[in-house]
Image 1 (cartoon, helix red, strand yellow):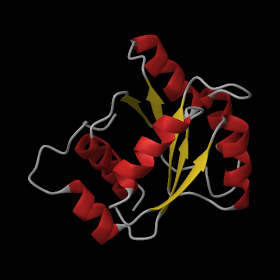
Image 2 (spheres, one colour):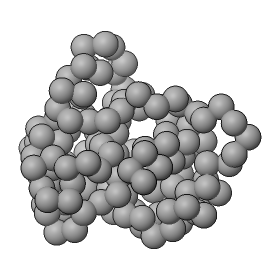
Image 3 (cartoon, one colour):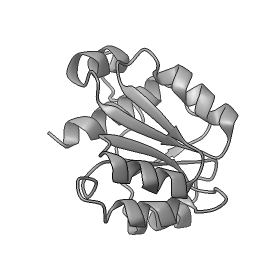
Image 4 (cartoon, helix red, strand yellow):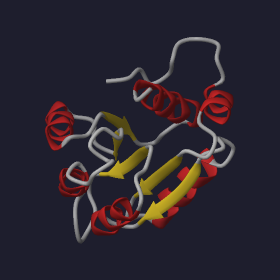
Length: 144
């Protein structure tokens, strides 16, 4: 698991702009308000942001083009984040893409389920801008 912040003086938003301009990120959450907040939080990063409202839509989008990183809510109708992650991991080009769980729950059992489903990390809501950018930067850099 990545640290919630990198502990250094580097501005993670500026680093995302510099190191990953145009990288495609998928935001998956059934709550339109949460998706809107995340889109706003990440609007200054230089990332290309797409949205999905459930796991089924996320899988369909990942089948069209690979994403550099996916932010995946756990509890959604139609298809949960855990189910979607398992299917996304089978898509060519998405086997190693960082998938970060988004949830309001922070217990050990949920963290274990996320890792077993193929997620790379776990972010607890509410999310702070700098912490979100820092964890995304960590996982994008881990792919290099």
